[in-house]
Image (cartoon, rainbow, N blue to C red; front, side):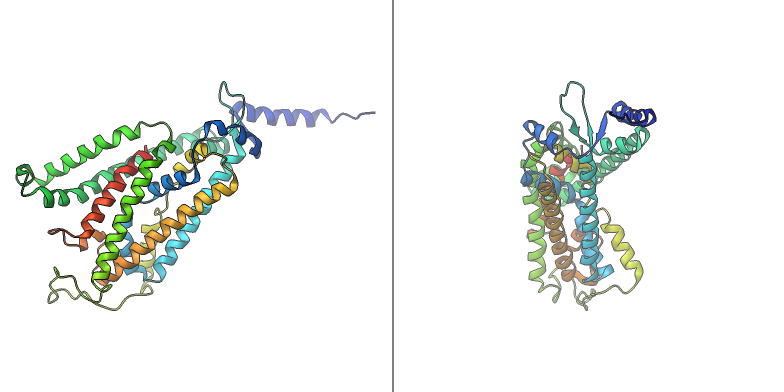
Amino acid sequence: MIRRPPRSTLSSSSAASDVYKRQGFEKGIEEAEVKSENQDRDGTVKSSIFNLISTVIGGGVLSLPYTCHRAGLIMSPIILAVVASMSAYSAMLLLSCARRVTKKKRGDSVNRSAESYEDVVLAAFGERAKFALTVMVLVLTYLAMIAYFILLADLLVPIMILIFKSSVGWVCSSSNKEKRAMVIMLCAALVVPPSLLKDISALRYTSLLSMLSISLLGIGVLIQSSTSDFGDKAPDWINAGTVQLIDDVKYMPSEISGVLESVSIMACAFMCHFNVLPLHRGLADPTRKRLKGMIYVTILSVWTFYAMISVFGYLEFRKTICDNLLKNYDHTKFSFILVGQLGLSGTLLLSMPLLT
């Protein structure tokens, strides 16, 4: 004789199932169903890494050498490594949540894994939390775009003056405000077309170009630091009688405030989480191994680049280092650092579509 389960057990089980159906989400590891989605996925691990690196690296890299002055040459990379580890762990945690939460769109025959940060928050906390997250991400990206435009004007106006001051009369006669407005409008016109693309994986070629552009800044800092014997002699344009540049290298922080200030600068140095799930959505065969490779290679590559900029930028200027590394260089004549400055401008310009 077959014994039926109690009615209360059946009713509670069906009620719980109805809750998930009403929200359009279901829990569970979706390895088999993810494979059935692969016909819509054409992204590769390499292209995803390019996109994530372009998302992570921004104007904040210019403040990292200052953290070596505040926290010390040894402690600063350690703090940076801790922040990088936390960012990698949280990104993997977000991906793990997305793979355990699925939804079914109207007209679809298969359940699809969560496609965005908002989908995960909706499944975990409800509609109000999703709305709050949407507002926070909107404010974050909007303010980042404003900062990028301001920084682009700071980077490109000195280069424009140096190149066109003798050939274009408008450059000499116009005010600095007019020059900045012209640069910002030109950059905005260049950003709009790639920002209209629907799939983030379509930006893989611009992301590769962005990586090549930011590498110019690293090469420029390394060359300038080596020409000064890594801080053992002052640059030619600094009056050694009025500015004492050479001093002992600070290896460890002298006060706790320097560590706290460095942590505040580095806290958002590896922020890319709002693009992790869209890249997961477009990645072909998104197994856990491939996702780990995507995240870990990205974070390790960015940490290596950050550490190089921090150490060599600090060694050249030491106690006179500014909170913006480029303020320490001479912009009245051509040098390779201006090429790096132009490369950073290209990186910011090509990274903007990833924020939209």
